[in-house]
Image 1: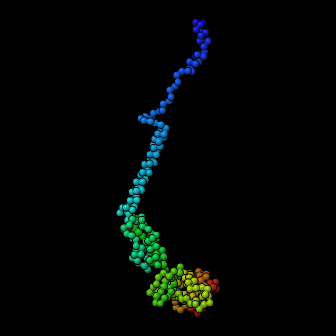
Image 2: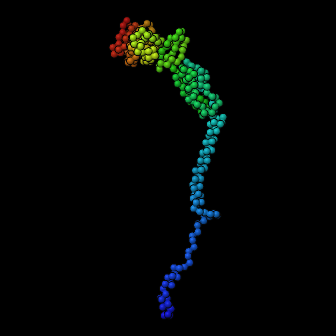
Image 3: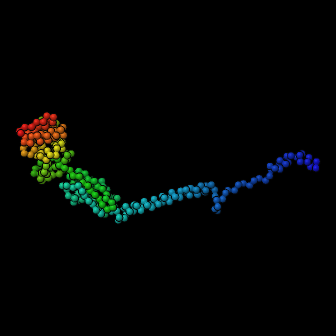
Length: 283
């Protein structure tokens, strides 16, 4: 017993060596995901990406299908095509004139109609048109809303009358003078200021004066006579005349003239060239 004990104590290294020098552990095997074949890290990442992106790819595919179908409905089908064209806002012009000028392509896909081009055609072919709104009326219509120019002055040319709007645009010629529109008479050639203010400038001055007239006065104005930049005279019905002066302070002059016409209905001469000190005579 004593010898056995001595042998164990006398060789302690053999015991430690035997404990730490056992057989090496086997290398860890990759975990199996339940499938067959190689399952490296790259493959696993790819699988995870596909799983996450599957709904996104499906949504993109559906969007492509919807876009293609929508394009066919808008452009290829017979459902959304131009079948009817309507007009509104005409006064002197007729709807037929506007339709002919617009030349809307009936039967074309409604979404492909160039509304700006249609509007440009109407304005170029019908100078009386000041503006036109072209709108799509789904599912089969095009609407044309026209705003016509209104004459504020007439320029007599031979036996006809050239109509001039509030912007000074000569837009049409009429065989008969429209009711309630005064005729412009320019006599600035004999004026010393004629060299400084040409006919076009004086035309715009006269247009400004006509635009400043109150509605009741405008209806009674027969002629606007322009002798120079600061010499504008109005001829009213019943032989009445109004010294207007220049085109400045038009609104104030209009108010003064309205008051004078009410205060002295039998007068035949009015002067509002200085609106703060108007005058009347011949009553």
